[in-house]
Image (cartoon, rainbow, N blue to C red; front, side, top):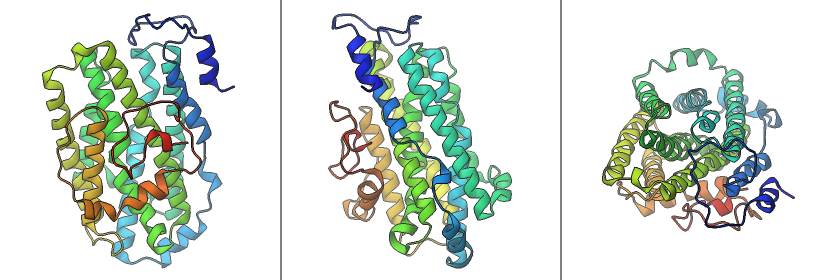
Length: 342
């Protein structure tokens, strides 16, 4: 029996009991949010470490089988991924302090452990590609500074005593960091394997990371919806406007990251226009996930060119993760949903 199934057998069946996710529960059980434990099981089922993958061919590809412009794209893409993995490692481990329920803490600590694995993996990849020294200068790049700035704003909100600010931090972190910020870089790195049959080891690591980041984001969305049900007063008339404004700020920063990545030229097999369309669509989907009106225009023809990412990278066949649950993450017919994850 899984932990979540076991939790369900021990929970109260009184549906009229009011819950408050911010109030402390000192006893272990009965669990009030049994469904959260599915996320623990999902990460356990997805468990991976970078030593499972062979990167020897990737080193050869980087040194011999790529053009100078492609090397710039790869190097800066990997540096951008690694920087975020360093910056966000403690967010999930701290959520129990604000929502002191055992099941919330279990998810948070499980996610935090996966972030450590991600950080270790990309640290190793910087080493094997021989670009570790470049990491020392990456935070001085104007584009990276702008990304760090908006991430820091989200993290600062998570330390606020104001519940509305804290809820906003969960929403922004889950939607724009976990579901968007790295995904244009994930698209870039997996495109080498998709179109050129290069960097297979890195593509494997990126695929594994992508799926876990997706799970993290889905949990954040569910947390926001839970808080909305319990505390509707926190979601006032200005809430949607604030989220949309934060989205525009994040989009501007992420666009500048792409300018930096492609400064020496775009990829023949992944034109910049395709990446930009992919990024705008990810932002729109993330807004829809939390009930906020999308703000970017998208081109279906351009999106079709990167549909393979959702189909090949994010979806897993014979997958019943969350098959018995409904979630808000169900937007485009071709887009990955919770039911497709692990």
